[in-house]
Length: 188
Image 1: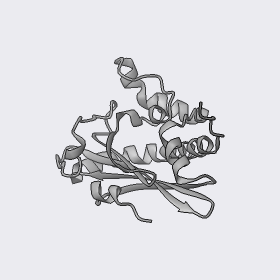
Image 2 (image 1 turned 60 degrees about the vertical axis):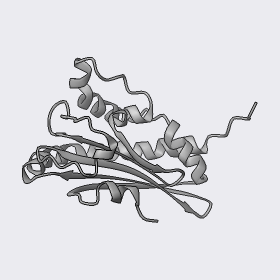
Image 3 (image 1 turned 135 degrees about the vertical axis):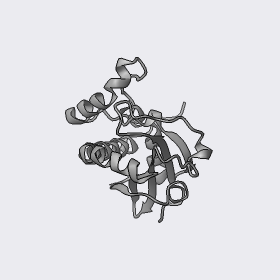
């Protein structure tokens, strides 16, 4: 199964990170878990997220991360689209190399065509593929610098953040997997 919405929103990119995990649950359960899972993360992950969010916290803008989307900074993402039980794509525009991330608030509809050369675009997708008795849950993060200058500025940040980003992505997948395998609560 191929990415549809991720390709539509960010077909060109210079930086990419991919992870996957098999979950012994139906796509419907994995999809629900994707939206409700909580990930505490390892001490390394919590420290990295806390450090990255420190400038925002000091300015009083960021909540204490509790839910999966907050832990990974996903509360700041635009919801670019979804195909239920198959694909979810989030995105953001920013100058990620800056201390506060230089996030630019834009409408999700403007994301695909946004082209200001001072910025980079990031798209983050989840893809659910039925596989035997379960679901292959894939994630892909793409970043596209919109000029040679933004690529040059993003490169050192990517080198520094990529190992931690990978750890966070793997912990997110594990948290979704755990949540999807939790017994369902009986209906009242």
